[in-house]
Amino acid sequence: MSAVLEVLAAMSTEIPSILSSDRAGAAGLAGRYENRPVAFLNQHGKEIVVGPVLAGGLGCQVERVRGFDTDQLGTFTRERPRSGTQLEAARVKAREGMRLSGLRLGLASEGSFGLDPMIGFFPWNLELLVWIDDDLELEVVGVGSSRNTNFTHLSSASWEEVTKFAEQIGFPEHHLIVRPFDEDDPRVRKGLADWDTLRTAFESAREQSENGRVFVETDMRAHANPKRMSVIAEAAEDLVKKLRSVCPQCHLPGFARVKPVPGRRCEACGCATDAPVAWVHGCLKCPYQETYPLEDVPKYVSPAECPNCNP
Image (cartoon, rainbow, N blue to C red; front, side, top):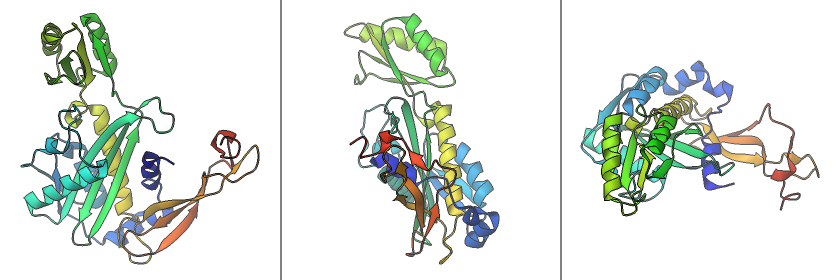
């Protein structure tokens, strides 16, 4: 299983019903987060979608924190590559927000884009939302993922082609970025959000381009991309579920999947495969774990997933 698939699986929103009930969540939280401020360092208005979800599920108040340029940790437009992993970047943001605000609760979001980890063909958006509770010395991560992303680009010298491309990605609601020549050209125009500005930027870039072509790409910053905002909201919902899922032994939040139990059999040869028959759920603090069989999944897997039939 790839690293991305392991993240998606371990951070699944599936929480055993006995743990995700209102009673279990209320017992575990015991009002711990009711009306408490949570530091959320971000530059692109993510609190608009995250705040209502956390307020409704936990009763906390998400407070946007400013004073730190998060572009220092990496940009989607490649001027500055991200140092470290997606999770590490989110953790740095959360800690910086807590430092600037002086709050004991911190929150941060970090997104990534690439190809679908299952098929490797469709564009893919993965969003992580990190929650840090310094009083409990606890870190919980919510995840959202979707193929419903407009992460794409076009290289063209034709305004007609750019117009068609813009319409396909949902412009002007979804913003665009323009560069002369290619994707690495530093002469970048971001946040293009109306047709006149886009046309002006395109013509200027075409004049500057060594080959007359212009590189146009979707702006993946959260405030410029409603599709991405919806995935961030999904990560917030997942985070709430995890924080409302409490350990049956120590009653701390964040009791969720930690590892699969492989063993589903191949429908062709009958051999055991890596496909899980159950998942082990564990506590983030104490060693308590429980195993929950997967329900409503086929008993057998395709030979394509079998290491014996498809080595």
